[in-house]
Image 1 (spheres, rainbow, N blue to C red):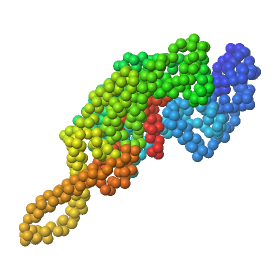
Image 2: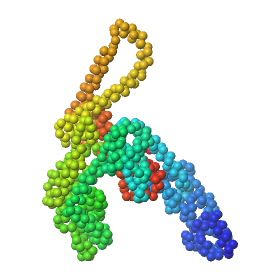
Image 3: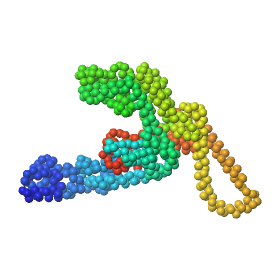
Image 4: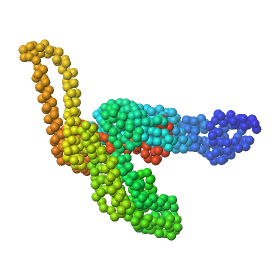
Length: 609
């Protein structure tokens, strides 16, 4: 018997068939898949035959197609090289699209599924997939560098995210207007931060990211960031080093305006807590949930589930109250059922229902503003002053019966004034980027939200900037012409010397010509600026980018300025989206830090290739 066990031990080292059988008795083995018992006499032939006949799919998926022919004693036909390459690329596409760890290709269930779909296909090793992803990453990065090389100005957004494994990452995205006046958003990197990530460290990492993609630092018009002290500090450092404009994320500011006010009103906080408990009851109680569905059906209302809010996100509270109000009568009817009442005896009282309704009316415009400002496919920064102006106006214009809501209105208006006070200040020595963007947006070029004297200051600043752009373009053209003229100049020196001796020096006339040219340049820019601001504003419902595409030839200098300012986003939402959803966070937590950047890069930029 000892000899037999020794033989089995050696066989297990040599053959993978023992992954599917175990020795039950002296000369009996049992199949792990169907529990069939087979005679064993120091040979695995019977077991191989059993696996061939009874479990080919299970065997092939669990051991890998590469090993199946050795295991079962017969060759497995392979698919063509073209077909295999297509399947491999499809698997990599799936991993990138769904942000799955590459180790998935070694999972038994995944290999079994692939074998079922195509038994001829041999799944490559994880090492091969890593090399394939690295190659695709390099191709994508080169494509991105090529795209960025052709842009004159870009804006960056950045956000710091901490994973469930306590690893910190810095996300950076890039935004600009293309030649076709379409908004472009590109993902640049997700950099794992070291234990210390001070403002200086983050500033250095942002510079390194720009260098990695061959973005000259002078091309970066602005960096959009949240209110975190270290990130805001980094933006300040980059302003001093390179003149990048620091733009605070308007979404974060908007969130602070509402969040801080909600928590300060006791009656509102109590109402929200009661609504939260009510929703939680329906989500936890199967009986209450069933009764709610019955009442919805009886009343002919859509079978909508109630929404539980997240206390740190006021907009989720808004959605919770809105859904609860929409389902008020089915909820009240369900709670009136004696069986449900035993579990939860308290509905919202009439005052709380009224307060919830009025509160959602106040919060509605803020939710709409947040959603609008978070967009990536259209201009947002230039609309911010008008949007903030309208928010404050709408907040104060509505009259509500509930005293706590009226107090909430007043405090929100105060918060808007306090937090966005600088938004409407303009100093020529330190131009306000947001107001300049608004002036270059044909919808808001009249700047009606500013005093007349500030409107004039903005227009003068625009004119000065346009003149600088015009002079720079002239200097570039002159440099090119001078290089061409050098050869011709050599040929004409002798003749020129003769004319000089007869007619005298031409220095005085050259100086006069330059002055005339300067004057003509200034007048041309002034005319362009006056004509632009003299036109009627575009409808606020219109997209300003097609307008600029059509009118760029009429306003060539201002068009160049507009392209540099209108491409700046109002929020850092694009960076946050790299990490925001709970599903992606959970999936990303299972990835190694080496894979995060490549996978996210390919996932977010997939439309480039």
